[in-house]
Amino acid sequence: MAQRQQLTLDFHAQTGTPPVEWVVDDELVTYEAAAAEMEQRVAAIAAGEARERVWLLQHPPLYTAGTSADPQDLLAKDRFPVYETGRGGQYTYHGPGQRVAYVMLDLRRRQQDVRAFVSALEQWLINTLEAHNIRGERREDRVGVWVQRPEKGAGVEDKIAALGIRLRKWVTFHGISINIAPELEHFSGIVPCGVQQHGTTSFEDLGQLVTMPEVDMVMADQFQQIFGPIEPIGPSGLAAGAE
Image 1: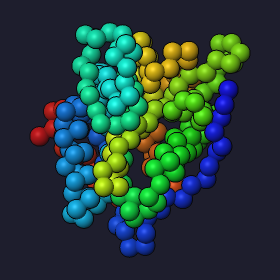
Image 2: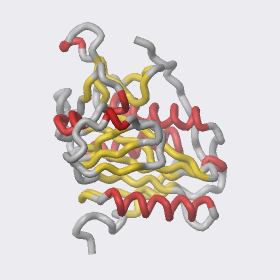
Image 3: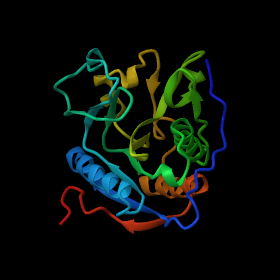
Image 4: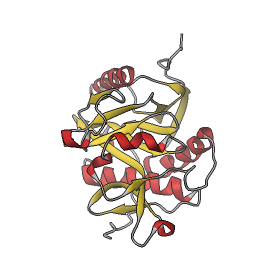
């Protein structure tokens, strides 16, 4: 059971960089709307016309396919919509009860090191879990954050958080997801991230009954420790039913 070295990473921006916009949507946002908004924002950040942004949201039930997705890992083709994405990785489920964070940062102002950025995202997730008394761990041979489940048997562990990113002109997009209280059975329609021998868990499944806003507060605090100041600016206006 290989485990990567726990890293303490400082991804703060250069002096003079404005705080990262922190956007939170409490209602569901369609994947189409989110993808279009990310494309526009990343282009604007790369052109120096917009600030960096982290966008917290939830999607309706759907599957996304990363650039390494194997079609055989889509087990239920007609269950939920399937979206091709430009992010790295394989198949992932998104749905209500799962917090997705799309991270749009300009690494030209931080570190132009993709591996270190991925480690920083993992550390953000691990620190958030630790604040809720959940021990999350990296694995050398698997992407994401994992929780050991000795009550299920020796060597058994489940995935609680996923990540998949893309860069354009050193500006990041896509990001991370963390399972708060999603319908875990929905993951059965895919082989999550191509890993068959391990399962999926959540805060709720582990007996940690917390609300999404409570997790959001911890995520905001832990993000700032690694990436620097944020400025909450409210919802995106793109959630279902938003005027």
